[in-house]
Length: 282
Image (cartoon, rainbow, N blue to C red):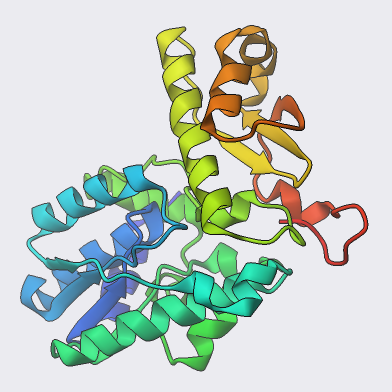
């Protein structure tokens, strides 16, 4: 349970940063709270929201991110980033996120400086700091990015509780990592693979919604030679029985390979290996 002291600690941390501040803003619960805290502590004119747009961003994420930034009164920029230009990103090893975050944060930092926002903040929280599968954090550290949630000692649970008290619509938003996190390590990240994962997830949600099945978490995992659909654990049997699930996956671009339905596990590919390849899965 969070207390008023947690909110005070976060706002004090934001005031210590001073700004003007550019926030690496994905539209998720963490970066949304950083953005809102920046507005409360520094004022909307001293905070800039920047969302990196690329093939790895699920298309449905951008509109709600825009709406929240608008409601907070901050300028919201959406620069194009080019993660796929980086061989380390395309190779999709365990350090893929480092190359992604490097591209994203370099773009956001440069854009922020150009608009008069020299400071940079990310939504890294206290839980992220102890997660062994977060190579992207190193990219932020190398660039001197501020991490007000982590510095205030706020866990994901505390982020959600403060967000709820502040009436942020993201307080209960499920985690929405980039689309590349759906591709098993060792399987090359390409625009085609990212696009078909996005199409498959949109199509599957439509199938589930039409059947009256509401799942909190949904992932389509590209395993290289197969596809795994992950839904809430109590919905696996129901989703497996729906006739439209397989067709949705096939139509999205996964024409070949086995398709299975399993219980959602955050970061499940971290623990898997691609047959015949090196590196742990993501």
